[in-house]
Image (cartoon, rainbow, N blue to C red; front, side, top):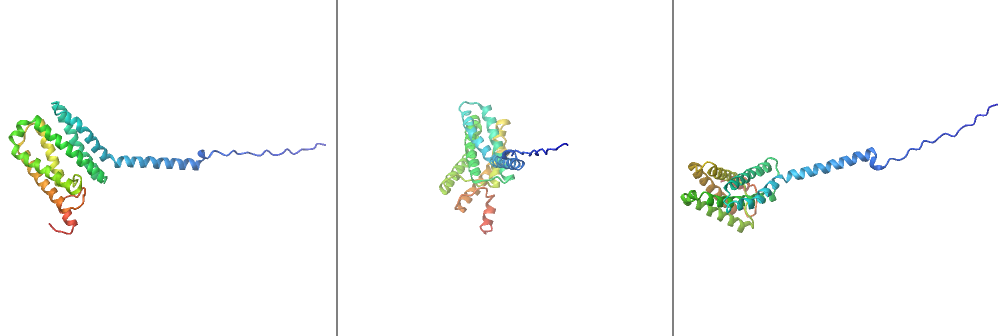
Length: 232
């Protein structure tokens, strides 16, 4: 007679998988990692205009050094790069709504440095032009200095109105200076630039008078008057 002996069933033992490798934890980790990456990319993109302004500001010592060293080729192309970067940072900031008070201040400081060194380069490398048109150039330089002093006295820092007329004047001045170095003097462009610059500086002086507090990217005198409920 055969006696069957029941064998004990083997218990299946499932070892716990470490939490870091669980599907849920892995998914959460990936989501957090992607969010951190997206946040970093957004932060970098948001500061792109500021980075361009800082790069322009950092290049001004080289631009300045090229003047006493009489390296006109270095000066010419460095100035060209600075002018292009001025257009680029403003275009990016306005198109993608990345404007800020810090960015406006950095842009204005870099613009002032570039303009002053640019005028010095014109004085050194294009002295006959300066001697011939001294009477047209000097009032604009003095007017610009007065506007700068007025903004420092009013706000404690340089103005950054960035009006449409101011941008047009700056672009025209850049085009004229580069044409002066590349192709020579252009009379109609010079006189038109002087007129537009004088009008733009007059608008900035009026804005300094009207605005008790520092503001950036105001658009123009019409927007300021309309915003205050005053019809021009």
